[in-house]
Length: 205
Figure 1 (spheres, helix red, strand yellow):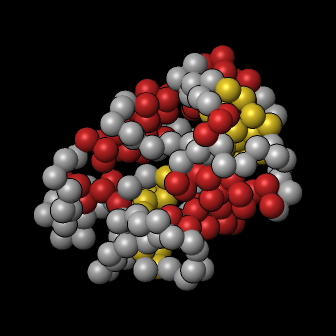
Figure 2 (tube, rainbow, N blue to C red):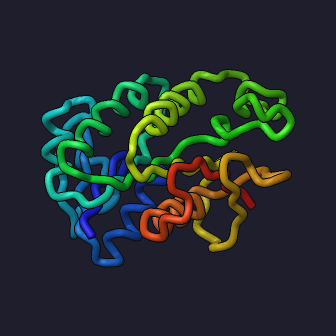
Figure 3 (spheres, rainbow, N blue to C red):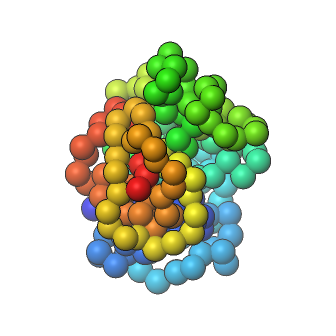
């Protein structure tokens, strides 16, 4: 399978990259600077910005699926890039995308009509990142793409343990944290297993 990975230099993306290359998949990454990549062998590297439609088009040329592990990074990159990614997928007839979101855009358990970030369940002082991730969800759900948004709660560094809880559209009860490694593990598996099409998935221990 040919995977286009966005956000490959980030915490979750770098773990996904390692798994995909080790498993022998064809992997293309679109990065602003290849010097930031933790691994460079066994993949195709396109240098450029995800907001540059021509570079995105070049990176997607042979892709079968897309993984987006882009972070908000105090920018509007997520909300600005989502329509470009969707247009690119349609142009290249790519149906499958798995993105990394945040637990803030899951439904609130106590107030189901609200997102978690809008409810007392959220302890975040700022909602800016959640609003960026929400914008991705809002545009994806209006498409006929086979999308899944993986929504981790508190995300400390750490390798994959291989056991965690998931639930569609809400965070599993009393979920407190999930490591970067296990989040990447689930993202990578879901890309192929396709168990949660057109769903947000809460993940935690």
